[in-house]
Amino acid sequence: MTKSPRKQRLSVYLEPDVMKALSEHAARRGHSLSLVAEAGIASFLSPDAAERQEAAITKRLDQLDRRMTRMERDLGIAVETLAIFVRFWLNTTPVLPEPAAQAARAKASERYEAFVAALGRRLATGPKLRQEISEDVIPEPDQA
Image 1: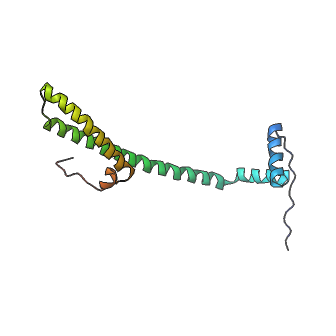
Image 2: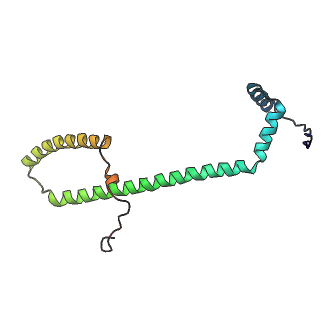
Image 3: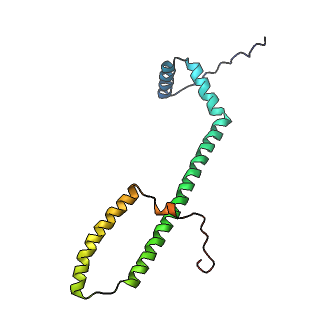
């Protein structure tokens, strides 16, 4: 049976608040001050700690990048949808004389309320427009 090397003694000076935190932590865990200090120093010197932290940060950045890409796509869909609707509406809606315009505004208010209710239902339960549009759509050369 081989003998393990003897531990070496190290004397350190700690700020009172650090010493208090070390003592409280060791007492809560039921460990000696030496064991807690040794584990802390080993963790600090471990190259794996930095690699694990870098891997965690990289993973989080990748998740954020994917979310940002989806948001950019969804915003592009929303902007294009609105632009198509506005162009269609401007091209197909004639200017009305004033008496007819007043009646149209009253009807528009009623139709708008129905639109908002339908939009609320769709957002709550139905498929989203962005889910119905393929991410693999490649524009034709004359439309790009």
